[in-house]
Image 1 (tube, rainbow, N blue to C red):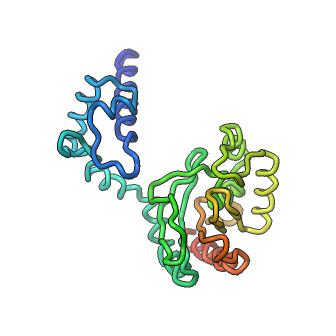
Image 2 (image 1 turned 180 degrees about the horizontal axis):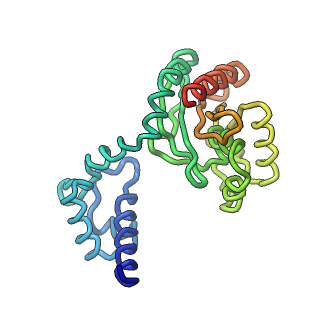
Image 3 (image 1 turned 45 degrees about the horizontal axis):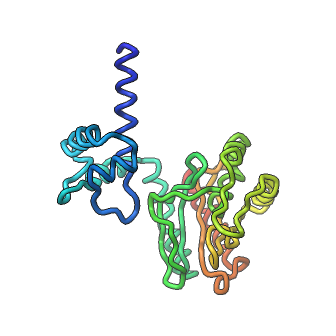
Amino acid sequence: MCPADRNHAASTAARLTALLTAFRPGDEALGVSELSRRTGVSKSSVHRLTTQLLAGGLLERDGAGVRLGLKLFEIGQLATRQRGLVDAARPYLADLREATRNTVHLAVLEGTEVVYLDILRGPDAPTLPSRVGGRFPAHATAVGKAILAHSPESVVDTVIAAGLARISSRTITAPGLLRRQLARVRQDGLAYDREESGVGVVCVASPLRSPGAAAVAAVSISGWTNRMRLDRVAPAVRTAALTISRTLH
């Protein structure tokens, strides 16, 4: 393949990726004009590319617009590492939810954000913005800090270099303070979110890891500040994380 062909293929792949990732939670169908606005891709290119995606089943026609297709779900199920992790963790997550009646999360780190692989919502828990497949800045979550604390220093450096965005009035935005918290997490095996990702919500998390290895994921419990005692649920979270970690060896 000549350089011109490689450049064209890369450009096409980038635009296809932009179109597929333009959809947001709650979107039903999007038209050509809206997709063009969100992606910066010309309307003529959007029309051509969506035609190709429709043919492949990655998009589906919905009235005058298009929506994400079932084929994407099928492809997602082939992500075996994540699927195996979810299957291994699910019984322990269910036990945590049953015992606490609060919301339980399983998440991994990707770049500077956590991606939620599984969420079991508790009947006594607040309505949270997290969703399966959703992302959130790692520094503002307990699961993110649990993973970062057991990640290579270069990973932490990347998160800090990207900027510690303020998600709530209590989000940690000072690099030095974040590093000190991560050191404490390494010592205790527990990470906390005290209204850092949202007002009125607290969370405690623990990493999933092999002895001496970096964290591959983290589990957490989230609840109302005035209802959930972090000191009471933290041991259960840590025990669940240690047990799941043993099943991954």
